[in-house]
Image (tube, rainbow, N blue to C red):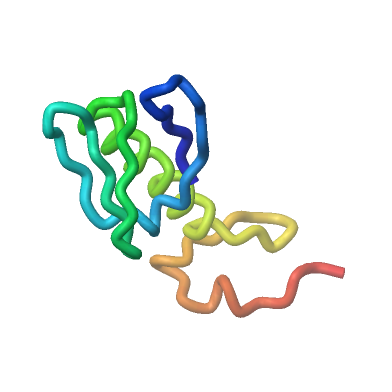
Length: 87
């Protein structure tokens, strides 16, 4: 989820998975996967930065599985996510 601002300065949060296109024309226009269009105050670059930051935070959260004593990297330890949590 990322926070953006409509042209009327109303902030909103959108599920980034719903964004299909981001265009500059001259305002920044989001086209969602359902065809809905939203104009936002942020530039294309700012939207992209927020998308990348959000995805990075999600991937970092998925990459580390805590077993109570150490963190295991899911990319190098395929069984890390399959272990039962400590009781």
